[in-house]
Amino acid sequence: MSTQRHPHEDLIAHLTRTTALGPGEAARVVADVLTYFGEPVDEYVRRRHGELKSKGFSNDKIFPRISAELSGRRVAAPELSLRQLRRIVYG
Image (cartoon, rainbow, N blue to C red; front, side, top):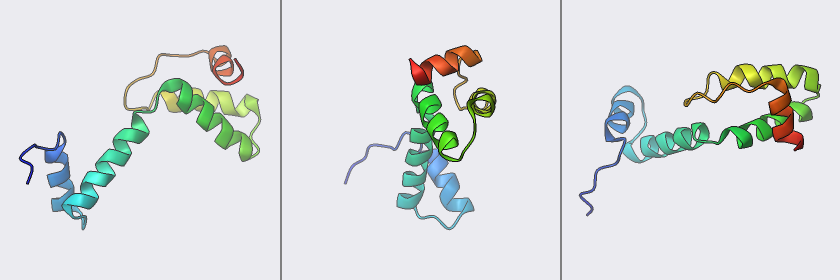
């Protein structure tokens, strides 16, 4: 049996105390959340652009929305102009 501690053991313990999740499930949730919020800015912008475009939004609505969403990311993204956002998507 491994004696190595999980890097987020305290968070996993908190989740198992405050939810119906078992330790394994809590560890998977933590890993999923960290992966989600660890997505690089350019990948996030491209993914969100594609998601919003597929829902019928126009670029005039998409880029301001993505700009606002970036400020709420786990690690603050640099402030990007609408032109910079477009360049990430279209090159």
